[in-house]
Length: 144
Figure 1: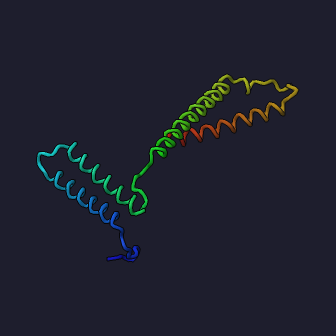
Figure 2 (figure 1 turned 90 degrees about the vertical axis):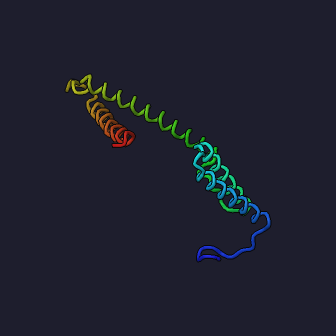
């Protein structure tokens, strides 16, 4: 019986056969799991067979595949995570450099009579701002 969000349709013989195979796999999974002597491996094999039967039914019926992620998606996620790791390391390295420059106290000790005092002040401001940005990014990366 159709519900409000589904429309009645005529299923093909292939769809019906695939659905019956799925129901059979569900029943087999239930039987295996109810068996006291069944191992975890037996139960997992039955669950895998059930999922494969459901995926096959979805494929034949033209429904979206219930798979959570394709191998291509998983590879892309791993690639992006690796890039994030590289970026985090670069940010940490840059932050360490800024901390080292600040710890040297060279910037605060520039003589007042320096000819390029305005340029020095601008450089100092840029270094300070970069430090604020990097500190914020590191906190975010560390989940703070």
